[in-house]
Length: 323
Ligand SMILES: NC(=O)c1ccc[n+]([C@@H]2O[C@H](COP(=O)([O-])OP(=O)(O)OC[C@H]3O[C@@H](n4cnc5c(N)ncnc54)[C@H](O)[C@@H]3O)[C@@H](O)[C@H]2O)c1
Image (cartoon, rainbow, N blue to C red; front, side):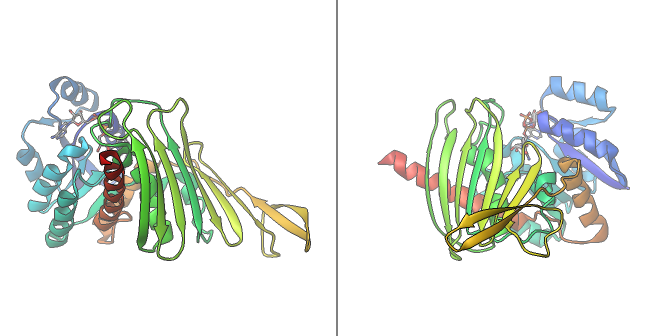
């Protein structure tokens, strides 16, 4: 049995605890959370021992799951790595680039498994496209949320947009050539809404908008590529593909459109989206990487790459505000 220790049992931490309880091959050995009221409730509800000292809990586990506020990610990851424990840490990897850089170095030296919680990689709508060739030349993303003081210890870029930055980097696999960005702080001390254009060396352009002060929620990504439009709805868990029809297409609805060069057949496909639990899947993937000695699906380098782009965005926004 793999012994798991949880650090941070707040809003998301409780979802993690619920999932760990359902995952085979692991044993929850305890949790650490400095908030007495919350910790007492968690201890009772999950019949789980609370530790009030980080090192004592680290000593008795094989792997940690860190779901504390971002400003504490570095100190907790560092302590775990120094004790040779496998690490799962929520996104964003860390609060500053120096911290993120240090974690990449420490993780490499420690020779343990390290996974970052970019959970949208496990979103069933995204997984439904795993057999579709995704080679976008233009990406349009909207991630809009209603205001919630949770998460406002960091900007909307590190809180929400980082999910999309990770997916975009995962899809495009080319170096970032140029970033332009604008954003504004409305309800908190850091940007609450931002619009960003990322140009890649291979010519792809991604246009991302994130807001945590919207009236309605939305999490949509639209990919435009040579022969197709692909829509991914991360919130409503739907995917659709609209493309030029080819004889190999299966399970598509086909219709014709008249153009100057004759009729074009268009095919619409709605890939089957399985009803799955993304958090459970990412935690199972972490367990499997440890047990089978394989690479975790979202590595510390992936977490670092997303942060690097996020910090370039923040710099661009900061420069505009100084002018
Ligand atoms: N992947 C996602 O979609 C997603 C969604 C929400 C939050 N998150 C991330 O999860 C983390 C926690 O977010 P949340 O919404 O659960 O916040 P939260 O404020 O609800 O919970 C944080 C908990 O951590 C505890 N805590 C504070 N300092 C700590 C420390 N030093 N060590 C251990 N625990 C500590 C707090 O007492 C609290 O109970 C953040 O990094 C956030 O970015 C990720």
